[in-house]
Image (cartoon, rainbow, N blue to C red; front, side):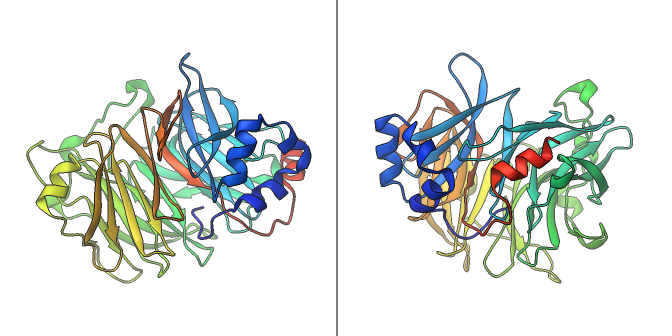
Length: 377
């Protein structure tokens, strides 16, 4: 779940414990001491292996864990203080771990006939994990429900009311899931091939997390049926922001970013032509800085990072970032990463993946060690 408050260095150290901090190399311990916030992101190492790392706001790596395959989206629960890394589509694993490294991770796999779409979120109390999945035989998007108290085994599912769901997030009410149905049909027999580009059905849905009932569905108009709705985040006012990837002609300049609130129609942001062209018809990640009222975008194809005013949609900053990957709210606005190993001003010998999760404070009803131990029973 994307949350509001940054985890400060003191909170992270307290959560991890003095014994864990003592294991850090002096350089890393010094970087953590200076850090304002802590993040996590998937990466590929120079030897081709994959992992997930916690890192400071300046980009210093604090801790690493290995992954069985490439990761994509991530989520963090301040309630149980656990994070999850989802496999890249059409992957079949997700790894639940404690960001401070104090407990052994748990790896789960998707059910037969399903694969993950690379994203998900925790329930408000941290006891459930929701994952976007593909029921590829029926060509329908599903939300898999995994119970933390049942070892993160699958305990249920309900539809996303669309095709090809990708990102989703939980609203502040703790009950409403905002889901981006990309509208693209895929099947694991064909890898990442898009099978229905001529008749895509992109949409955004609001779904009741408790009952699985559809609250609202917003289908894109026929004129924009090749505009795949991919990533979402929610503002402080409850407004859902969404970012798109266009599957049409390269010289087209469709709108790529929009927003809506419950009970409203979709509204696209009228970006300057220069910015739309720079995004190269592909927004790879979106994040809202609720405290500052900002929206951040990245485009690896365009090699650009963009910051918008959430109230007006005006472009406040546009920065060239080669192979721009993830974006997450930071104390100064946004932290950006790249496939080339850049995280803010620091460069590491890894290729960061497309998403960053900001680790947030929260009162836990269980320690990460206890939560993971119960999941392993």
